[in-house]
Image (cartoon, rainbow, N blue to C red; front, side):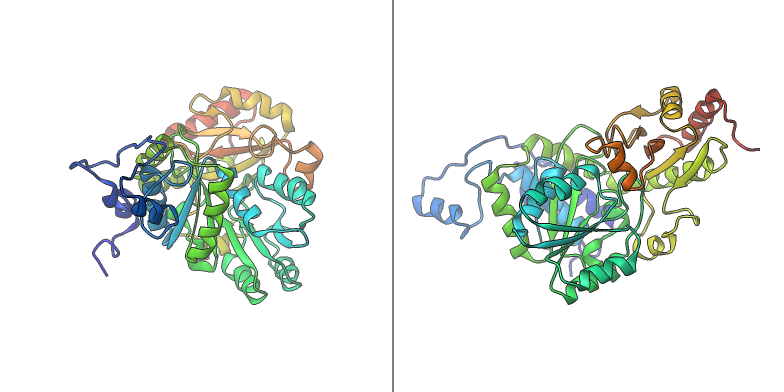
Amino acid sequence: MSKFDQARLGTKAVWGGEKEYLVHGATQVPVIPSVAFGYDDMDEWYDVAIGKKKGHIYGRNTNPTVQAFEDKVKVLEGAAAGTSFSTGMAAVSNTLYTFLFPGDKVVTIKDTYGGTNKLFTEFLHKLQIEVVFCETGNQKQIEEEVKKGCKMLYLETPTNPTVKITDIKQTAAAAKAVGALVVVDNTFATPVNQNPLELGADLVIHSATKFLGGHADALGGVVVGNDESLVEAIYHYREINGATMDPWAAYLLLRGMKTLDLRVKRQAENAMKLAQFLQTSDLVEGVFYPGLSTHPNHDIAKEQMKGFGGMLSFSVKGGVDTVRDLLPKLQFANRAANLGSVETTVGPARTTSHVECTPEERAAMGIPEGLIRVSCGIEDAEDILADFEQALKAVGYPVQA
């Protein structure tokens, strides 16, 4: 075992996956925008083209900068293989379409991200793929449904935007018993706080646009796993269907990941303090954060997570009308459909995570119209709390003494 293998995650975030791609003495991975890669030796070209030899032939397939990004995520998640995509939803959809066929069954939870939910309710339905939705956090129901047989167990934990928790280890064991593939969206937790492969998952998905990049300036997605044949199958689907990551995006994501450990730990600290603060407001009906002892799955979160993450949500009295009044009063928060960035970002589910869904569909998933999602940034916690306090007071609901 090398010294690097023994290094902690913060060190791996800085150094992981890059050395092979440094050229001419550079200390940073270069952006290589070339669409094609040339060969004078026809036999070598052929060997690279069929995968017999390492190399690159065409940008839709592979790219050195993109591969460095994939390698860094592999290091952080402790994975053997990985492949990237143009967006997080491309990572999700390509994974589903690679392994699911008419007549197959997927077991999942009700509280997945809105775009993922649309894949399950609209697109997979057209392919005659059965999707069974279980109550998020109801371990018994999930395991009983899995035991009936399924092709895939798809989890998202913590969920977007209600930050509910599912026991990965327990549900993965049930899935493995029936030969099902276990896929976990780890976007909210990040590799800093959770490593699903260690808990029994086969494949881990990230919207790299979010916490991995951390600066809201690059789109991307990634899937990693320990079974190289599974990742190779997803890569093959992606290379033919073309949802390829841009090398410029890969460079920005690589740069962002160098500070992943620092950012996520600061964001988690801020999220905990804000969640505790919001519990003191008369305007707030409920605060949802797995780090709170009041969270229904707090014990599971403590067991499988190293930290509770930078995401929380809270519901307010008055529903949408209060949301309209409250959010514009925040001075240190972007009102936008994004998360995981260094800036605090807020928004209701109806315009962010579940904008694709109808009010009725959101209600069925347990998402009230007055729910506000908060992605805590790396600002000083005192400023975040003061900002929310002044906004709450401006609406007319003081914080309890």
